[in-house]
Length: 240
Image (cartoon, rainbow, N blue to C red; front, side, top):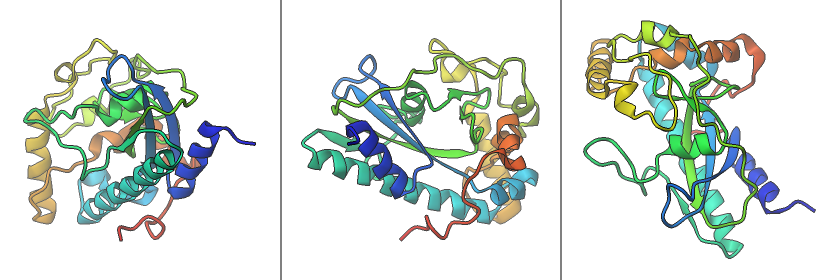
């Protein structure tokens, strides 16, 4: 008979997650000791499409993936609540950011503690399976789940592909670890400004979206070569 961790994992996979991990977040969370991280990869054809810059199709995909992740974490929340545990789905309608674009419990923090990946020189989560071409979300709980080994240091080594490819020259080439602040990795304001410029120039849409850094990541390129699998369309994860 599957235990609670196995049951929840299957529930989340059935709901649409492609990667699932559990992490001990007790050292950084006041209320919930366990974080559940989920990820869905960006479809391969979208990544190829944005190699020359952001597109409206990528924007639509971005929103569809966020909607899919919202459903995944809410399904997980409902499952755990029914089992008698406390749970909080960190969906986009439940979590807010402060003026510095920080949330109380960042999805990337949960993901690294759940062993899904590390923070790359792009300041994005990098997963072995899909590189940084993933959208992520998380669920917080007090359920006694079997946690994974956290990843506390970058595995990017000397690679600087994303740094060199950044249109804003906003990436500083810093190797991430738990003691490294976001500002040491990326100039977030320069990044956002260039994203808005590119989206406006290419689509006429006022939105900060680019994707260049994750499109060129060597781990993402492995995914594109077919060494991993992911949805090729959004029919199964379209927003309601």
